[in-house]
Image (cartoon, rainbow, N blue to C red; front, side, top):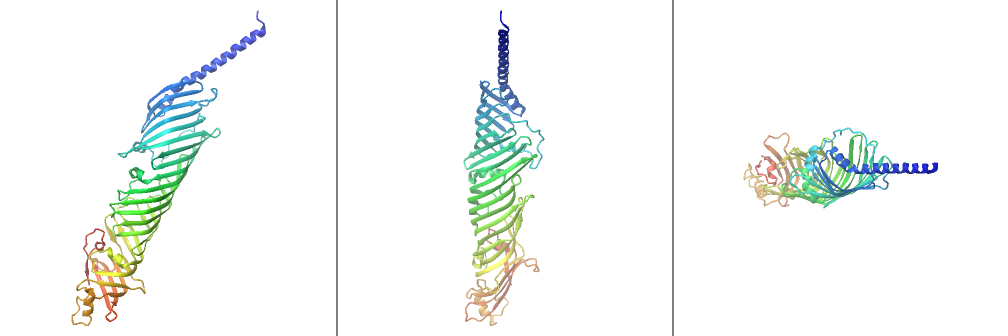
Length: 495
């Protein structure tokens, strides 16, 4: 007969055994249903065509191979997905590792389903927690859009908890001509996200077609080259996403054959963007060593501008060295989508001979320095002048040589004492030293057909010829046709 102590020990042993069996059974059952739970969770999230193979299932490790599913515009596949736990009795699912993942993204479909900028996201309740000790993902993202070649990004992601209600993670993305690294923190109670880049570089040439697919440049097609670097930071709070950045462009070159063979070399830019979602630019500075278009050559180009909430660009400064002097533009506004742009150009000490080189069919040559102010409007294929002027500064002088028979002697009697001198001047035999020169463009009180008035006061350069000359000439017809930008000439000159 057994003693009471023996019965107690026997009962206790059975009790512990039952507890262990029940605990082990619960653990095994829980891990046995995880594959089913995985498929159910993916389908509940909108995934379809879910496939995977369970390679191993134990209280400490769940190994899944060849996981795949579709999610609207995304096709996902991973060679290996594992969950690892140090202790089977903890509520955490352990460490999640995804290896050799491949995500193919139809960017056009994804963008079509994205909410409009500024739209409020769907309301959701804060999650109770993320049931992992660690998350790591390695793989590739393949971007597809339109007829452009696929772009493959190598991605890496790792995240770990910071206490009970916060997580911290790092992500890297790399591709030919592109690299970015991001740090982020996430707080569960308010679904609050903070992030910043630790590295960002984009080579423009490999990604030009992709950029133009989403943001076509006006007057294209363009050819871009150069390196863009910068920093981006932002946050998500109360359903609102805010991101800002600073970007720097170096070693850049831009060409556009359709805009008179436009070529810009040595481009540098520094841009401060206050809101990336709308590309609101607080301040931008642009510089270029040379800009060439047709016969126009600009050097030391500098510009400052910003972009407002209305989408317009406010250009506050624009200047360059050109035509032997300096050109600057008064502040103006450019609206994307507007077929033209209007501005006021100021000229300071430009060389008359270089200005004349831009014209055609003018019966004169000149040398000297000119200054002036001229409103212009460019509509993509046509240049129009507003009311302005160009002339000599007080105290300066220039030289003019005409080649126009009858320009000065028309209406003058051959018996006049000045006739012989005027004849030599208009035939180009004598040059004029000009002390007053002013070209008024589209003068406000002139007849409608008159596009310019030229006033010249001077005398022959030859000191032995004493014959002051005063000229007041009118230009009738389209003055713009005198500028050699591929337009037809239709101007006429009359006294």
